[in-house]
Length: 105
Image (cartoon, rainbow, N blue to C red; front, side, top):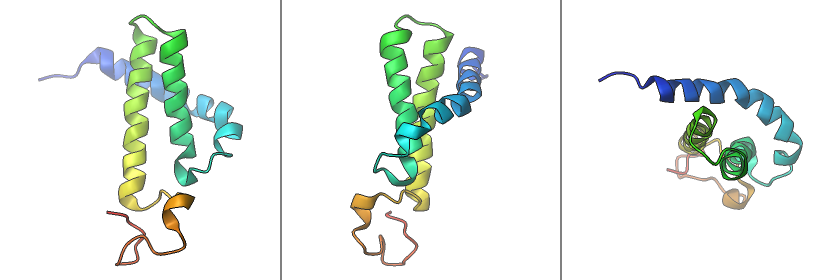
């Protein structure tokens, strides 16, 4: 049981390009009514578009975009569990849970 170097390299490539890409799409993702996960959703969409239109064949760039989708979904899951989603359409002005922590689970 070892580390798949191809997958590890793809994840590192995604990590290297994430901050710059996030800054490029920030003017658009900040306008989305998605609370604290607008950036993650924007990065998922950017990964999907990149896979569909730019990197149709297998390769390290496509693998990086696959890893990126997994990473962004993990970040959304973490936000959901920690109660940091702040989605306007879920709050409805009431506490999200009986214990008042804001955790929806």
